[in-house]
Each structure stands twice: as C-alpha cells, then as structure tokens.
Image: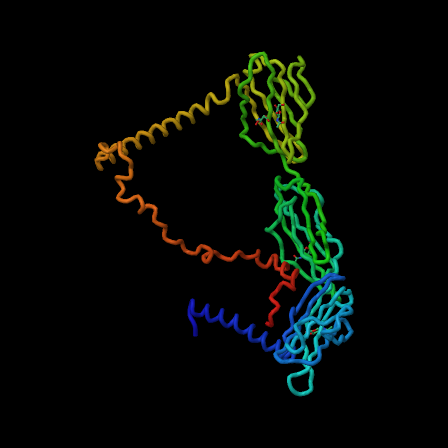
Length: 438
Ligand SMILES: *[C@@H]1O[C@H](CO)[C@@H](O)[C@H](O)[C@H]1NC(C)=O
Ligand SMILES: *[C@@H]1O[C@H](CO)[C@@H](O)[C@H](O)[C@H]1NC(C)=O
Ligand SMILES: *[C@@H]1O[C@H](CO)[C@@H](O)[C@H](O)[C@H]1NC(C)=O
Ligand SMILES: *[C@@H]1O[C@H](CO)[C@@H](O)[C@H](O)[C@H]1NC(C)=O
C-alpha cells in the first residue's frame, strides 16, 4: 500500500529501475554476455566513414567483423582496404573497425565476432548502421478550398515519403516556426524506408493573410532542407483601426486638405465618400471639381489608405461632416470624418501635460516634506555640510560582500521539448545518443 507522495516516489522508482534492469538483461542475452559494442546505432551518408569498436575484458587473438554480407578478418598490421582494424590492440581485448566509404547496401547490421574467454563458442555483438537516404519531396495537402474566411481553420497535412531514417518536419508561417496546432506525426515503414506525415490546424485571422505556410523537411542525407509552401488567402470585411468618428486636425482654410482613413480589408476595400448630397467613388470629383476621392493606396498587410482630397479648404468644408463607407465582398465599415483647423495636441495633450505636471509637483512636495522631517528627526540639518560618511558608522560595512546567492541554475526547470508533438526530433540523430550499453 502506498499513499500520496510516497506512492508517487515508489512508482517512479519502479518505472525507472524496471526498464533499466530489463534492458541490461536483454543486452547481455543478445550480445552474448561479454562484448561491449560502440556505437550501438549510427547514421551515415553514402561515402562516409564509421568507427565501430567491440571490447572484451580479456586478451584476444582474432577479430572479425561482418559488414553488409561480407565477413572481414581484421588484423591490426593490415591497414589496406575499406574495412580495417582499429583499436589499441588485440591484447587489450579490442576488436574495432574503421569502415571507409560507406555503401548504400551496407545499411543494416554490423556484427563483430571474437573468441571466447573459455570454451570454443565465439562471442559477438551487433550494431545498426543506417545509411541515410534522402526522402522524396515534401507534399503539402489540404482538402479545403484555396481561399479562407477569417475565423476559419486551416487543416493541412504534410507528407515526407521514403526517408531513411525518417525525416523531420517543421512548420513555418513566413519565417516563424509554428508551435501550436501541430499534431503528433505519424510514421509508416515500408521496407527500410520511412514515411512521416503530420497534420496542422491553424486558426486564421487577418494577421495570417498573405503569409506563406511552409512544411520544411530536414534529413541527414539532405544538405538543404526541402520545403513545400502555400500562400494563405484569407478574406475579411473592412475593419477600422480607430473609432467610427475621426477628426483630422491642423487643416488650414485656403490650403490643401487630405482626409485619410486607414482601413484593413481583403479583398481590397472600395471607398465611398459622402458629404452634403454628393457621393464620390475613387478617381471621381464633385460637380464643382473641388473635391476628389483618391484611389486606395495599399500600405501592406491588407492596410489601405483611403483619402479624400480637398485642394482648397473653405469654411463650408470645415463645417460639414464627411461619411466614408469602405466596402468589399464581405461587408462594409462606416466612418465619419470631421475637419478641425485646430492643432491636434491642443485638446488632449495639454490635459495630459497638466496631469503629469501636477503629479510631479505633488511628488516633489512629498519628497521635500519627508526630507525636512527626516533631517529634523536625526538632527542632520546642522550637519548638512559634512560628508555622509560621518553619519554611517563605517563606510566599509556597506561594501561587505553580499551573501552568496543560491545556485539559481539548480532551481531552473529543464526546458522541455514541446511534448509529444515534436518527438520525432529524436530520431534524427540516433548516433548522438549515449553509446553505452543499456
Ligand atoms: C540485426 O540485429 C538485430 C538485433 O541486434 C536483429 O533483431 C535483426 O534481425 C538483425 N537484422 C538483420 C537483417 O540481420
Ligand atoms: C490528417 O489529415 C488528413 C487529411 O486532412 C486526414 O485524412 C487524416 O486522418 C489526419 N490525420 C490525423 C492523425 O489527424
Ligand atoms: C493619415 O495618414 C497619416 C500619415 O500616414 C497617419 O499618421 C494617420 O494615422 C492617418 N490618419 C488616419 C485617420 O488613418
Ligand atoms: C495616407 O494618405 C495621406 C493623404 O493622401 C498621406 O498624407 C499619407 O502619407 C498616407 N499614408 C501613408 C502611410 O502612405
């Protein structure tokens, strides 16, 4: 019986110890008890080199290594050929090989065979050599229509077929890696080649519009990652960035005025300006030709500058209201634009300035008062001329070393990978795993 924390600990110990013991047992059964082989697994490209070392605790007088289907007899003094002896010497129980110029058909097991310590049955150990083979190009698939509405969710699948070992997939939006909405990858094996597929669900907003969704495949046998891309087309109705009523400040009677409103929309917004009983579309002027609606200017990322141009502002222009309706296939957004001949800061910023001033003045007053009270209480007023050293018993004290801080690093949590989502990362570098016996 176990309760609470104790139970947890007990379970954890069991979970940790059992596989370790089991592994040890399996290792000794499989490798014939005595032979230690390193590495246990390696990934190499065709043409690469690999060192494999088998070791026993007694002196040996022969050393054999099976690479591909060929058994090689390894003799320390003979260093010619593709598979040659490596190690400190047979007398140290070392039977190692330098395998040069790795060939595709050597993908598979490499086994060393050594004489036994006693008896006449040879002992052996096996490692796995994965000769990397680049996967085919990644494929990015989505069952959905090419254009999305804001608020919809993109569901896509990336498949990287036939790699050895399995390829690694990362997702990017433009150049930024996507970490959320990535599903667990699924790996299927056919022969000795592996295909990985991974799904993604991505909620779509105006911020994703126009961005490039990329599935990037990385692999040991590729110098450059391979990518499959798709540009996200997302439609949304016009959106205002400011409240419905906009005041354009600082315009002067008799000079040019530009009433500009920034609107975000995709497809592009069509502006419709209305004032008095005039309605203007872009590139059109009113009857007198005094006011012109300009074509929308794309500012990037779906933002548009919609402008009404008044070449000479009259008193009448200042007095009326301008109504702007931004329209696209998905909706409309309405604005009211007012003209002011005052400078913008006049209203708002003087207020802020005044508040800041008052606060600062109050702070100064409080500081002065507390200083006065403090000075009086400690009788410092009279010693104001002296240096502060006389007031503090010993200046050196304050310079005493601080107590050592706790080891901050020890308290840090190890950063975890993003859980099961990115677990395929491990499979990429099997040779980097500890080479020790399990
Ligand atoms: C390679 O060795 C492993 C055990 O180390 C064994 O299970 C597997 O069958 C071997 N493969 C071949 C092709 O001999
Ligand atoms: C991934 O997406 C594809 C196509 O959208 C679907 O057929 C498959 O079931 C999905 N797999 C998982 C694990 O969600
Ligand atoms: C008008 O254009 C200026 C300059 O680009 C910009 O700072 C201002 O925010 C715009 N006004 C509106 C209401 O979009
Ligand atoms: C928007 O239009 C106004 C008026 O045409 C112009 O003054 C302003 O510079 C424009 N803003 C940008 C960012 O182009």
